[in-house]
Length: 189
Ligand SMILES: Cc1cc2nc3c(=O)[nH]c(=O)nc-3n(C[C@H](O)[C@H](O)[C@H](O)COP(=O)(O)O)c2cc1C
Image 1 (cartoon, rainbow, N blue to C red):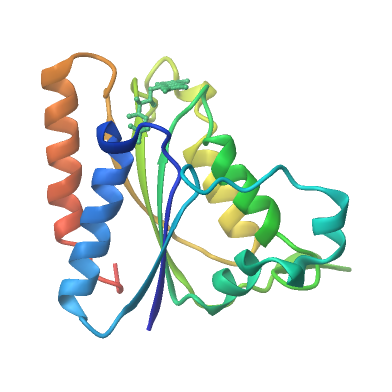
Image 2 (cartoon, protein in one colour; image 1 turned 135 degrees about the vertical axis):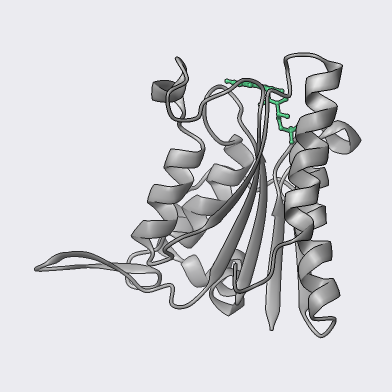
């Protein structure tokens, strides 16, 4: 089984999403040590913005092949300016490829990404859950759900660390809670 682990936080060792995505990968590999892990650090090794050349030659970059080959994908992302880091968006721009991961049909778009399990460690400075005043400006979780659904990946598992920017205690509790939740995950989750 192949696991693709993506991190996109710019905050290095202070990143909440990196701590949680690492905990998810640890839990999954502890349950199945035969899992082959590829880690791609989209902040340390940033992809350029999409260009016409890349769009016209999607097989010329490794991101699409890595995505298609993965059985399990673990994504670490922080909410930056109400959405995902642009580093992660640059990766998405390389894997949403017509004819490869989706296609348009007379009945509407069809996802082609096949059976993959996706886990997302998402850290947010504030609170954006249902009923929160800021719920309407949440464009990280909602965007990732839309993108994954578009390529045919239903039911991604989100592990949230929220309230990271409130104060040190709230941050520590949110990260600890998310890491605990991550520890119980299995590929079947
Ligand atoms: C550039 C930047 C933009 C941010 N924008 C938001 C935001 O729009 N809403 C929010 O709730 N928190 C925001 N935050 C706080 C982050 O969501 C929070 O620090 C989170 O832990 C980031 O994930 P990371 O620690 O893995 O990088 C922002 C942080 C940074 C560094």
